[in-house]
Amino acid sequence: MSEGTGLGRFVVFEGPEGAGKSLQIERLSCRLSERGVAHVTTREPGGTAAAEAIREVILERPELRLDGIAELLLFSAARRAHVEEIIRPALERGDVVLCDRFELSTRVYQGWARRVPAETVGRVTRAATGGLLPDLYLVIDVRVSVGLDRQWQNQEKTDQLAFFAPPPDRIESEARSFRERVRERYLELAATDDRIEVVDGAGAPDEVERAILALLEERFPNPFRGPSFRR
Ligand code: T5A
Image 1: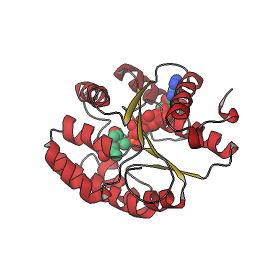
Image 2 (image 1 turned 90 degrees about the vertical axis):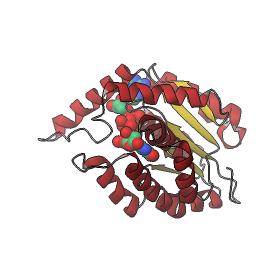
Image 3 (image 1 turned 135 degrees about the vertical axis):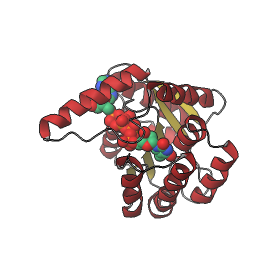
Image 4 (image 1 turned 180 degrees about the horizontal axis):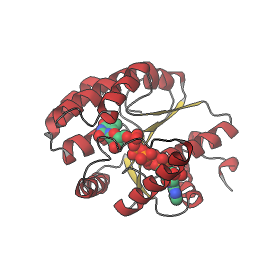
């Protein structure tokens, strides 16, 4: 953790849509529970009532016109509430925080794909986070076509349970070239920053999970190394 007084680890899962972030967070959370490790799982945008309300505006109202700067400000407002109410208190208690997306998403989606200047993204983000950065970003990398297929399959499961399928959200409705830019940017940033590790997300869920556990055990023996993490 770059700031704060607690001993908790702050691990963020990133990657393109449909990469398998939520699934792997759920699995890691089960592993930590088995070992009695105090932890919190959360997501962006979201995690608090205010941030969930902002999420609805940003993602579920694609008819609203928002440019890259407006998106940056909204994601950042949600992040501010999330950091102050959930993430920082959890880290100060010494809990592990597993978060689905954080400021790397903003650098990639608003900064790169929406072309908001990096300096603007950096300044707004620092105001929102107070300088808090994760110990590690785990980027689950999949080809765009794989992510799209998985989202479709997920959608099919939801459709069987509901009369009306939700329409694609603001970002999901973007063209495939937007998704390609997103994926490329994650890989470029990972190549220049040791806080960012890339995990191949193409294999079966168990295989991806094993790769994530191996990486975490190596980076943070405490609290991730232990017999119950091995199958
Ligand atoms: N955003 C977010 C910004 O633009 N700026 C920001 O600052 C932030 C914080 C968030 C959107 O907001 C944007 C980025 C996003 O577009 P979201 O709904 O939270 O929207 O979207 P995602 O985070 O992309 O969530 P997804 O659910 O689409 O992707 P996940 O979580 O990566 O994938 P997951 O785990 O839900 O898996 C999808 C399906 O694939 C299966 C799962 O069971 C599920 O059905 N699956 C696998 N199948 C086969 N093999 C595997 N290895 C599998 N792993 C998962």
